[in-house]
Length: 311
Ligand code: BDR
Ligand code: CA
Image 1 (tube, rainbow, N blue to C red):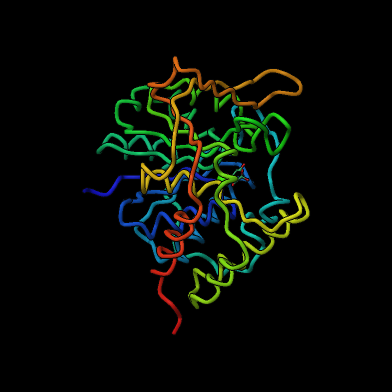
Image 2: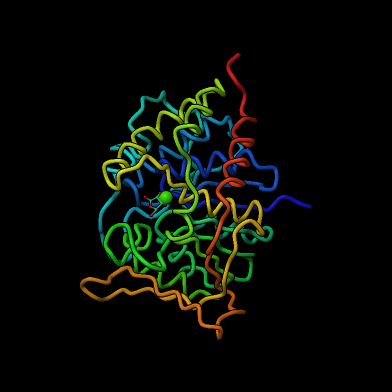
């Protein structure tokens, strides 16, 4: 079967980094570009981080398109306390050799979508995708499906109501949810089923590869944050769930839903309302509900082991 043509719209981000490195090592995917967006840190930094990750993995062939610097609904906030001031755990990096395209993210996605059917995995706030729909409404004819990490069926992680990617730009999420395309949503209640632990960190270090070492080093402060926040060192693999879904569409159990976003409200801004009524069973919007973490970690370990080791 031909590899799925994929663009990853991202705000790297430590868990974005794992997702990207997994995608780049997966033969089921043809990763054409990383398009960047404001989110975990500002777009200057997320773009630099995308270039760092492509340099780390030796993927000069993948484009980097810089996207929106400001949410449609106006500036909100970042998650530097989770991902580090630079977004990737504040390690030291040499200047990346992979550069940035002159074309912006939205035009890049539109151009590549018109060339052949394209899948979008969006693992940051949805500002670029909403801008794409506004600027080029006909893009929906060329997009096979959109898989996003975002939202929560039960409880948010920024406020009780809102998950980070939606909270940053609820107006953008509302536009994307209303888009006439196939949409699969990987919310917090799904992504919290997928995590790495200290054994996996040792596995990464034992790979004796630059990729393994860097991921382990950036995941360490991510584990520490989680420990202080909820009392355990689980490394939640939020963004990798969107990539796992594209790699293996039968790995994650999904239900048809009606998905809406609260853009008003004082307490509930950024909440996602995912109605699972039987009326929506055949909806073109689905939500991920269940994943087997053992199978996921096995695949992730195998794929990360394909990067060259130092010895
Ligand atoms: C999402 O928020 C970000 O901090 C992560 O990278 C992920 O995309 C999880 O809520
Ligand atoms: Ca992210």
